[in-house]
Amino acid sequence: MNTIGNNKALKLLTAVLVLLLLGLGIYTIKFYNTVQDNELELIREKEMIELELRDMLGKYDTQQAMTSDVRQQLDSAQTRITKLLDSLATSENTRDVLRNYRVEITKLRDQRDLLLQKNDSLAVLTQNLQNEKTAVKKAFDSSLVERDSLRLQNKALQDELNAKTALRVDSLDASGIIVRRSGKHLVNDLAKRIDNIEVCYTLHGALTEDNIQLYVQIIDPQNNVIGERNSITFGEKVLLYSAIDQANTSAITASAPRCVLVAPYSAKFQEGIYRINIFQEDRLMASTLLQLD
Image 1: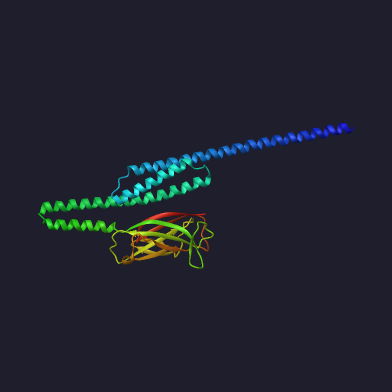
Image 2 (image 1 turned 30 degrees about the vertical axis):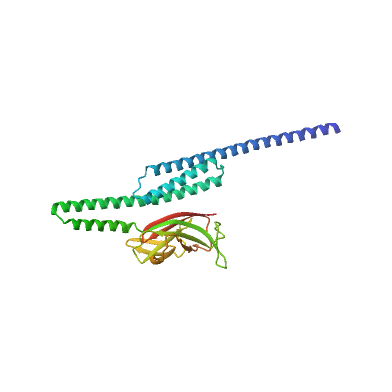
C-alpha cells in the first residue's frame, strides 16, 4: 500500500511539473512575440522619422530665398536636419530616443513654417513693390513726369519695404529656471522643480523707433497662456500675452540677449511641450518649443 501511495504522489508531482513547464513555455513564447512586436514597431517609427526628415530636407532644397538672410537661415536648417539624419542612423531604437527626435521634428516644422511665412511675406512685398514701380513708370511715360519725382517715389517705396522688414528676432531660446535665494538661476527641465520659464533672444536690424514693445506669449500643454495673462487689441485682433519686454533702442546691443522670466499658470508647471511666441504688435516675430519632463 505504501508503494502504491508513493507512485500516485510521484505521478501527481510529475503532472504538476509538466503543467508548470507548459505554462512557462507559453508565457515565454508570448513574451518573445511581444518583444519582437515592440522592436518592429520601433524600427518602423525610426523609418518614418527618417522619411519625414528627408522630406523636410527636400522641401528646403526647392525653396527660393528672397533675401540673403533667409537663405542663411534655410542653409542652417538644412545643416541641422542633416546632422539629425546622421545621428538617427546610429542611435538606439528606444522610445525615449525616438520621442526626442519627434520633438526636434516638431520644432523644425514650426521654425520652417515661420521662416517660409517670412519668405512669402517678403515675396509679396517685393512683388507689390515691383507692381507699384511699374505703375509709376507707366504714369511717367504717359504724363512725362519728371525723373526726379520718379526717383523720389521709388525711394519712398524702398524705405517702406525696409521699414516693414527692419526688426528681426534671432536666437530665441527658452529654458526652465530654478531661482535660488541668492538670486542665482539654475537651468532645469523638470516641471515640478522649476520656478519660472526664462525666454531669451536678440534683436537685430535698423531700429527706427526710440522704444519697442515686444509681447512674450507662452502656451502650456493644456493650451493656456501662462504668466501675466493680459490682453491687448490691435484693430480687430486680440493678443493674450504672458509678459511685455520694453526695449529702449539706444540701449540695445545686437550681440547681447534679452531675457524675460515667466511664472506658471497655476502653482506649478505641468509636464509637456510649451510653445513660446514673440510678437511685435500682432505680428509674429519668432517661435520655439520647450519640453518639460
